[in-house]
Structures are given as structure tokens and as C-alpha cells.
Amino acid sequence: MPLARVRMTLPAFVEALGAGVHVIDTGFNRPRFDAAYLLVNEGRAAFIDTGTNFAVPRLLAALDALGLTRDAVDWIIPTHVHLDHAGGAGLLMREVPGARMLVHPRGLRHMVDPSALYRGALAVYGEAAMARDYGRLVGVDAARATTTHDGMLIYVGGRRLRFADTPGHALHHHCLWDEASAGWFTGDTFGLSYREFDDARGPWILPSSTPVQFDPAALRTSVARLLEARPRCMYLTHYGRVGEVERLAADLLVMLQDMVDIGQALRHAPQRHAKLREALFAMYLRSLRARGCRFDAAECATLLEMDIELNSQGLGVWLDRQ
Ligand SMILES: [Zn+2]
Image (cartoon, rainbow, N blue to C red):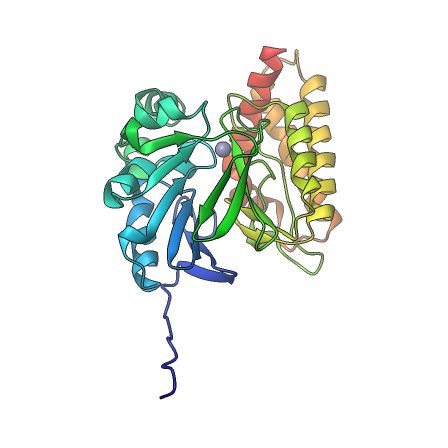
């Protein structure tokens, strides 16, 4: 009897990338802005980043669509505890009772008791935006969480993955190496690359210096360490899989140095935050125009608004820490 060919119809927000890797659009901010990944091997599964609470129905729908029960999920792995990556992790842990969380040691206490994370974000975004974008954060039972360390190995089915401690974007950031697809799950360590900017010259990338732990020297070292594995691709949270890793790394490091130079030049400037915003946006526009970007300045400003603001804030915090 011929084997029935299983044809799975995936929801529009799930894309199968091959090799058991699925990217899920969490819906945060705009389409294809914020990703969660579902890695499936031999019937076992892991989520890498979760998006916010509002992403959890999508993550569960992705499991359903792939014919996986909730018991198939062994691991829930936030790359770091910023809310667009881990805001939904506690709620997801509740829905997937057999899973363990793997979290960077510096992020563990924030996952167990998210009140400080919530207060920090509240100070930046305000009540209305917190309710709209993040909802109430759910703490994780400490008994279900394991901290990671550099070089730590985990398995999804028989598939081996390795953690690397990657400070620079945040001190609570690790990346996860997938040998089978020769790709890193990079969180925000390998910057941001929005699909809207893709063109004949390939993807465009920019570094992320979200407050409050941006450290350009550490970030440079972390990017270099990722390259040592000779990756064929990077799985970015913002957004999706990119190839051309060597070229993107070079572009990323050039822009990182430009950011540092901008920060140093404006260190003592009056109205520094506004000037940092202006200078960063001008830098992004120069880089985009050099490749013949099809968007005008206003469209670029709209697509990059959140990063212009967060990167300026993060650069400011770094300057004050010097
Ligand atoms: Zn982040």
C-alpha cells in the first residue's frame, strides 16, 4: 500500500524553512518584525524565542498544524529576556507543561519573577502600551528552569544544539548553534534585518543597542565567535533566516563602529538624545541609499522608528556608563 503523503497546511504566520526549522511571525509591532522559531526533530520540539503573551496562540497553532501535541515540546528557550523575545515565555510554559525553560543565568530571576522586567518596560512605554503590546507577564516555576553556560549541549530528539554566551546586545543573551542546518539562532546579537529592505543586493542589516546593557566591544567579540562556527545561515528574531553571513557580519561591524563614533562625537552635546536619533537615522539612510533603496526617507523612518528610538536610548546609556 502506498504511503499516504502527509500534506500539512500551515497557517499564514508559519513558514517552514527546511531542516525542521519553522519561523513563526508573532505579530508584534508589524508583520515580519518579530519571530519565534519552532525546531522539530524526530517528533520532539523546541521553541526558540516566544514573542509576547499575544503570540502564544500562534505558537500553539503552529504545533497543531505540524501535528505535534504539547507533550512533544521539550524546551522553551528565550535568547534573552527582552519582552519581544521572552514576554510570552511564562504563559507558554503554562500551556506546555512538559517543557523546561533554558535561560541565561543572568536572565533566570527575571523569568521567575518578571516584576522588574515589567516595571522597566513600563517606565519606557507607559501603561496603555504595556497593556496593548505585552499584557500581564507570567512568572516561570523555578523548578522548571535550567540555566545555560557557554558550550552547553542540548538535544531535540537526537539533534545536537550548542549554547554560546554572547554579551554585547545584553548580558543575559545566549545564542544557539544548530549543527544540522549550520545556523545560529541569534536573538539580537547578529543585529536586525527586516525583509522589507531585501533587494537585488541581498538583505540589509543594522546593529541593535537596546538599553540598558549595550557593550560594543563585547558585541564585536560575540559576532566573531558566531562566525567561528562557519555558519551557512543566521536565524534572526527580527526577522527570519538570512544567508550571506560573512558579508552581513562585515556590514554589521562597520555600522557598529559608526554608532560608536556617533556616540563619542555627541557625548556632551546638548539635547543629546534628539541628536543621537537624528545621527543614527542619517546613518541608516546613507547606508540604504548607497544600495539604491526603493523607500523614501519617510517610509524608512516609519520602518525603523522603534530601532531609532531604542538604539539612541541604548547608545546614551552606554555613553553614561563610560
Ligand atoms: Zn533584545
